[in-house]
Image 1 (cartoon, helix red, strand yellow):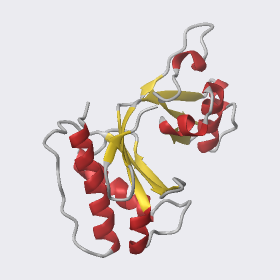
Image 2 (image 1 turned 120 degrees about the vertical axis):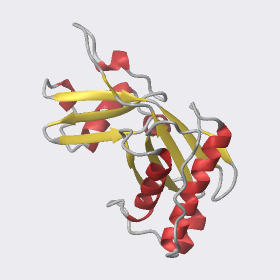
Image 3 (image 1 turned 180 degrees about the vertical axis):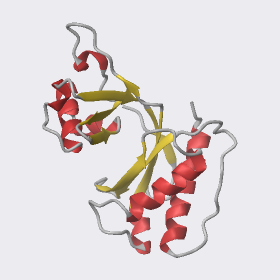
Length: 197
C-alpha cells in the first residue's frame, strides 16, 4: 500500500512528464525507492471542472518499474489515446491527473452454481475480460462513477473488449479482477487526495 505522500509524488511526476513532452523538454527519468516491485498503473486525465474523460492509458500487468510505467502511461494518456486528439500544452492547465496503482490481476474462478456477480464488488474491483483474441479493462472507479450494478459492469467490460455484452458467460472468455489505489488532483496541478467510494 502506498501512502498519500507517495501518491502525491506519482501524480506530480505524471503531470511533469506530460508537460515536458508537450513543450519538448527533456524528461527526468525518476525511479521511486518506495516501489520495490514492478507495478501496473493507469493515468487518467479528466477535464476540469466537468470531469469528462480526456485520456486514459496504462498497464494492467506489472511490466515496468513504477517510475517508467508512470512516465509512459502519462505521456500516452495525453497524446496516444485513440479516442481523443493529441493534447496541446495549454490544455494541461485544464485537466486533472488521476493515478491508479494496480494490484496484480487475478483470474476469477467459479465453483458450481457461482456467478461472477458473486465474486466482484463495485467500487473496489476493476475488471479485465479476455477471450477470442480480445481484451477489455475497466478501472474500479468507472462503475462507481457511473452508478452501474455488477451486471452492467461485467457487460460494459465485455463491450470495451469489443465482445458481445454477455460474452463473460461463455467458456472461451475469462474474467480477471484487480484492485487499485487511486490518487487524484482536486483541481489542475493542485492538492492530491485519495479517491475512495
